Length: 123
Length: 451
Image 1 (cartoon, each protein chain N blue to C red):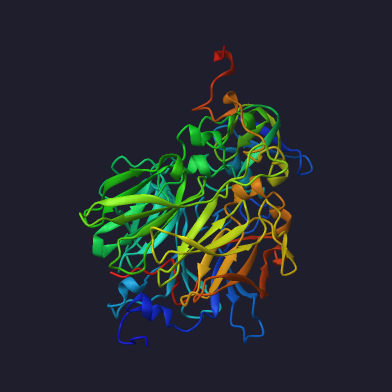
Image 2: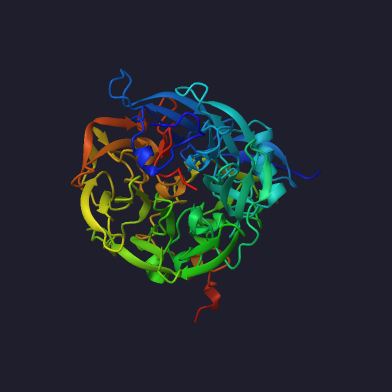
């Protein structure tokens, strides 16, 4: 198996070797990391974490809008690692996850992927 | 007089109103999304004013795992089973919206200390029925159906999960979802062979939080649906348009002969009324329009966001909560075409009218309500949904939610917050939690239906 090292920056730099084929939530919980989660299908945002370095594949996620993705958020229940990664996990990492939608609206390119207008497509 | 020869509930709404006063409440409280790694739980709250533990949580039943987001719940049996002596109102079905787990809780063996009877695993429900995100629970006189807001991947429209009275999965209840785009709440009125369902959004849309722009992209509901209850198929849809953005709680009159019903459109902050006209056709109209309110720091006025509505057992009063404004309103709907505002109280909210009540800082706004069977006591909680709380009232993470009680004048109209009653969920033993829906052991104003 290909394995990568996941470092949890806000849990004292604890590091875990994980299988690249498994979602990060599953791998980390199997190694005793206590993480929040909800739906387990990538739709509910409860397990969101912030990626500080590294790369993941999270094609199955439906919860994040493009602003949240640009702010580094990933959905651990469906994200699989593509390299060694350093993450901030749990609600402590959610400082930029929630915003008042009336006070801080999204631009067209910041919506969820299925309805966003790509920046380059705009005149 | 309750007829003890019969099944659960009451022979009629009028009989329900004469039932003994509620002494216990069951209210869910959540840690999902709060940063506290503990399971959500069902609280039992003492509401007997003669008791030494009045206005306190007297027991807590933790769910087996974390991350459920307990939300709404329902009884295994209600007045729809009144004619069946073999049925008993014994179990609360307590779903987890996020996990899809269904918790069956025995509230009858020891009403002050409910116990977990059974769990139907969310993964099994997803595998067997391709449904997820359970919301409203209604008993159908024997079996139970639950509105499920998504498919097994969180896409709309979902459907209806049917359980038998042993809490085994029967399968999908509906024969067709027709062209329905979204699910949420539902209520049935069997003498008119009708069920009405409303629309929130796909779980993948509403669970992560509220992106206002998604309303314009038609990711949120604006229709209500009239079903043929016997053939289990939608027959007619009303497009409510801008008047009906996010139609949530559905309430028929308790009177089983009446065709009148109501839905609260959360974002439009309107009450929509429907009825069957003399020709037998369904009609609808808007009867309440809560205006947006200016706020010094907001670029646009704040909508009320009507998160819940409820009818008194005698169908005379309609109550609604404006979760963002912070008020609860009482309307006399004796003439359902002409709602008259008869009472209003304030707690929390973004307008700052009542930041503290009974010595507790109210974080959130009036959100979920339950009315006593006699119509005189309205119990109110302040948390809507973990992710939406986090957007609009982020201080709720450290303050928790709270429960208050409002005394309602059923003769002349009017409401007053009871000065003796407050449950501060900011002081829970495992840390601040958030309280949502409430039910009473003997049935309440949002559970019982007469066939």
